[in-house]
Length: 149
Image 1 (cartoon, one colour):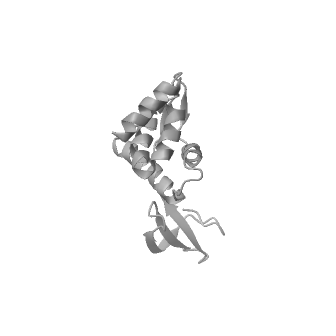
Image 2 (image 1 turned 90 degrees about the vertical axis):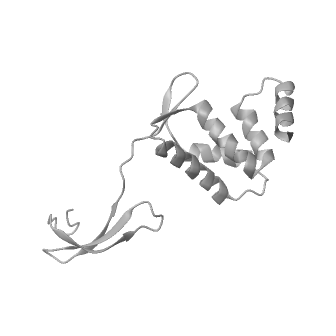
């Protein structure tokens, strides 16, 4: 690790601890040449998660895009953003734990709905109406009936 002040390639670790979000190791380092102290973060290198769309296109999994969809589904509902963030974390962790690098958009939507039904049923219906692309009122009514069972 090069010193940001003098460029020396040697430094010693003065302190090491998990980061606040617990997703990295925070290290305080000191340059052996000039004594300058600086912080580095060590993170696990992850393969990007790809979402395979209906038409076969692939795009990188985007937490913000999923969050926007969830926020639209929960507008004027008393669902904390932290709950939605946890829902996304849970989905991402499940996919990474399974060692999956690609997920079909259909499967991703199903994962969201499976969790959202326990959070807020109105948000579930709103999300499902976009995700499942209901063609008519009958399909929508059928989803409502299945939710009540």
